[in-house]
Length: 236
Image (tube, rainbow, N blue to C red; front, side):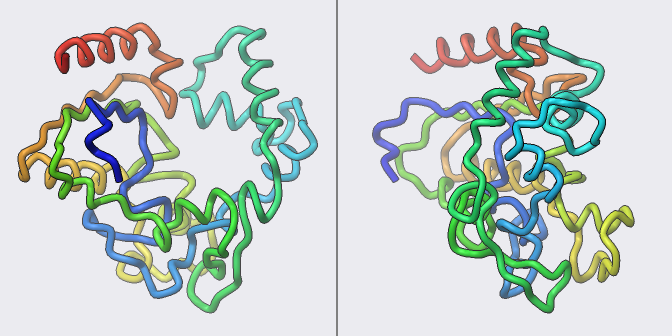
């Protein structure tokens, strides 16, 4: 909205420009008119319950501690016990409910049976409401640095948080197939938009940090630190 205020842009494992869920193809074509499979109904209910209880155990695969260590990080990476407690406290501070996380949702006939509501964070980044692909058309094009972990399972072309991929793997029943509901190619969508940005006079650099998950700035902090500093120095 205000490109003149931006000198450069650094993205770390960013969401697709077409949001999370509800789209297909590298150009973000809507899955259907309802954008089913995105929004407030797309979050594991066990995780929401345990998060709301500030649960700190590890006997449930959907416990915040396990999500932190197995999803945000690539196992066996672990932070210190002190930092882990800080992260868990931060996760537990999340406001839960239809107005906050994950938001409200509606049921629908289209697979997987849920579609976006109108409030809350997960609806804000549903493909129904989110599309920032117009970044390629801004006149003040600044250098973009895109950093991502090589083994991110959250933002990925094979995301374990995406109904299309979960259905394809057999984790969500009655998947209608690749032609109807394919996995969302989140990384490919980001690259597609950045290539459009480049074709229209911009520039970007994609850095893949090896052996890391969704948090390369934590898992490989020095690599990311050095790259960001060199990038910022080059844009002065």
